[in-house]
Amino acid sequence: MVKSLTAPYAAGRRGSAWLKVKVARTLDLVVLAVEWGSGRREGWLSNLHLGARDPGSAGFVMLGKTFKGMTDELLEWQTKELLARETHRVGHVVHVRPELVVFARVKGYRPDKQASEADTIDTVRAFAS
Image (cartoon, rainbow, N blue to C red; front, side, top):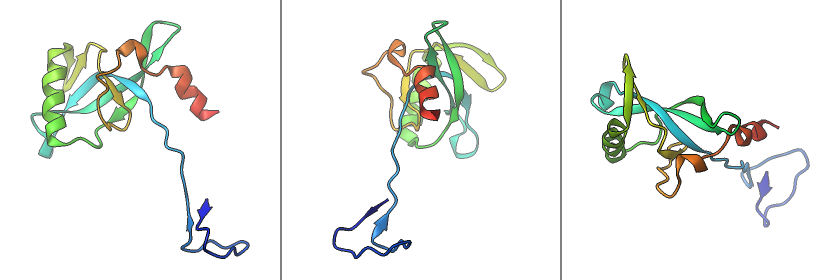
């Protein structure tokens, strides 16, 4: 919590002068697979399956899925890019070569990073500590 320097302090009370500040944590994760969208996103690859590197196996650990924060322009770009990296399909899920790094909240793709530079599962575990 932080408070305006000009506001008086009142023990045990939070007023409009107080602001809750959260630490923003981001991860650089690798796209492992993606699902075809539905509704407004039909025809585009939308729901990303994201993983962290596992240094012990040189593979990836699936952490979860996200579809938040994507513009139409980004959906169009990632559909093209992910189809170019397709390895196989299972139902509506398109599995891809693990090459593209993305911020976990899909703030943007990381063309400056290779999959081998993405965050590790150890980094994710450290968040929970």
